[in-house]
Length: 415
Image 1 (tube, rainbow, N blue to C red):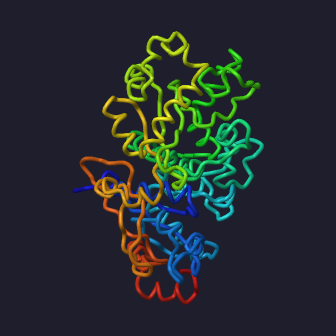
Image 2 (cartoon, rainbow, N blue to C red; image 1 turned 45 degrees about the vertical axis):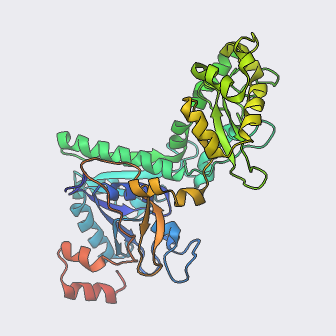
Image 3 (cartoon, rainbow, N blue to C red; image 1 turned 90 degrees about the vertical axis):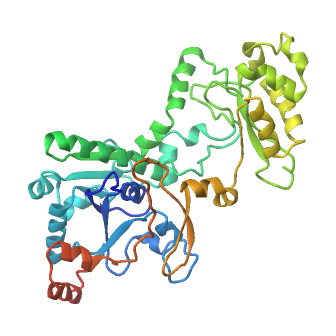
């Protein structure tokens, strides 16, 4: 069965995480992704955080599935000639170079349009146009500059970054959507365009509820669903909200049985108003149903600490899975804190292809995430990441180079 992006060719000049996340997703959806790498070394993440000597790292393999690799010295004249053929051959060029690198290679937007007017050029940058656009940005820098860190953590502690890669992988996902939109628009216009996803912008988009709260705070000077209410103090900026849900439904993380030994023996519990009666029955606080201090959501807000202490007194007598089973019987929203170890062995995630096992010729079998987007008419099959330059001869043959040409290019260290 054909895949959604069959026939789309992606020229992948990305490295590390943000760009490779984007191009891997497009490859999972069926695009032919040609990853251009430096001869001899390739993407820097091939060597970073290695756990198997002499084999590509998990950092690289888990971000470059379903791609083909070509090595190319783009600084040489012959390399630039090959690159020009690749631009003619492909539909999309994706890059996350420092600003201006593509121009210095001689492939300005104007030049690319001359070569291939249908070409879409998609870029990941740290910042969009403005005072910081020349700055180098990594994951945690993006989280800080995009507003995530200032609103993460406990109010009496420093800002915190999250383990979710919302700066790198989050921006890659945004860029992939932009590329698909540009491909769709090209059907009508016949022409390509530039697509930009800045990491600061991507993080801010994922933090939109905090921008919502900033405006509410400016208007009312208080955020009643935050743990600082009513006994803490609010400043002029949205504070860190600990484990409050942020969605208007009071929630927090509570301990479960075994928390003294297991750092993940916790449960997220939401004291949702429509199931307040069920909550009171489950935790043995039926008197709260008629107590004016707890009977309504408005009355409970100043007393949420007492509510969650009572919930925790019940959850510490149950494992997180026991508690979840009981709460779900009563339609009380909750969720267990699951570790990476547990997720790696989750049979349901294996069955859906969200966690996959992939075999590699040098490192052997390893686990990776699979495509998080499931299309009913085109299931994703995850293939291993390419070895450095594994498809160089194959790709150049598709561009019209003969075997003798390849020998000459190899001798000149162009490929």
